[in-house]
Image (cartoon, rainbow, N blue to C red; front, side):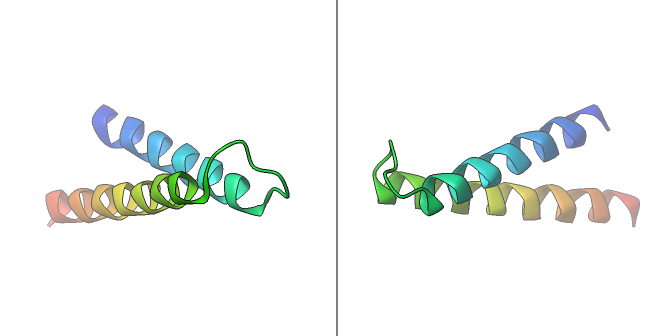
Length: 57
């Protein structure tokens, strides 16, 4: 349970960072890096949700 909570927090903050890095007018990161962080956060979140759903079944 603790691992799922930690993975969820990491996925959430990666998604938030990626979104804000993409919508800022003068980003500190290159666009490809912001997109990579955003997609990794979304993928990690989906995997965490899928694994917790699979463990419950």
